Image 1 (cartoon, protein in one colour):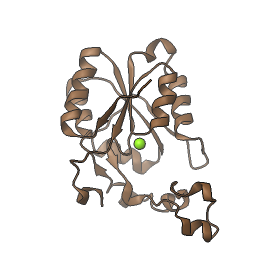
Image 2: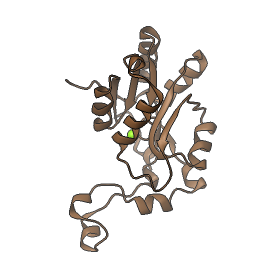
Image 3: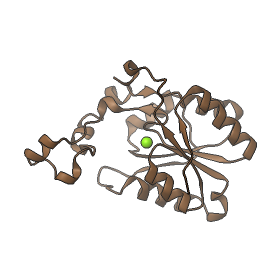
Image 4: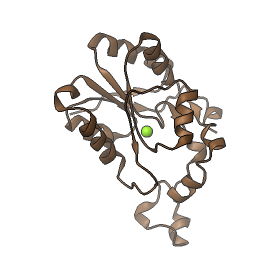
Length: 192
Ligand SMILES: [Mg+2]
């Protein structure tokens, strides 16, 4: 089955909101590449890193977790950029509609402060439970969904996430899913 894809634009924030209202579904929203851009804190392993013995060849293109952790300071986290779909959260807040957040981030004090300062107030926050929690994104999100929501509720919930394996895994748990793709409307300067 094909996963529906939607670009990260303000227009689509309004369209998703209307779909949520019409279908009476509860959104479960991812953070990175959906509400926020944290690329300024992310370094991916390169072929040079394999040569230097920092990672295996199969890790090229994956997140360098040590560097990411060293850049998870309050100052840098608070510089994460808003993406257009943050407008969906504003619409949900204004309408008094509940939503949840599912992120592969650690629920550290900096990210909690970021959410508060940008008006993101999830009823349930599914996140990585500390620095030693090394579960894959889709595993930790599936665990969180199973923990908080019985199967009978899931068909009325929709995952909004940029990661295809998260979409596939949570759809297998009975949820609706929407994959978010990068917007070509984004100004490159917003990503730096
Ligand atoms: Mg993401």
